[in-house]
Image (cartoon, rainbow, N blue to C red):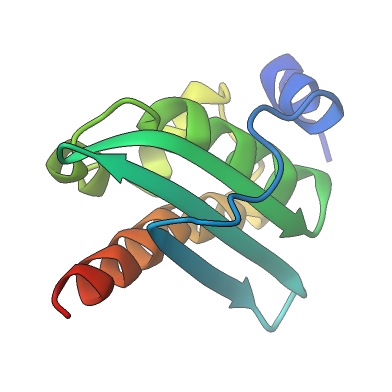
Length: 124
């Protein structure tokens, strides 16, 4: 399987890896087929994702897509963050092998789950 230089860079030097203990939203997603597990943490200020971190247990592509989605979403409004798709993540990484596209889908689902958790918390 051949990965782009960007995928390898984000795998070897992931951005925004870690945890936000007082996160406003937490999204936990996983793929039972391959075993990848991703947790996305967000802090929201004035409807903008002011900080975002991730913890991922999985293959290199899962780590790279987690890293890339944090770069794509940090600083965006909630509305703009919800528009980020798995295709956006894969394109920013200069592509993923077809067998690893599910990793970019996890990244999209992770940010959406974190935002959904945020909305559920502010309702109460």
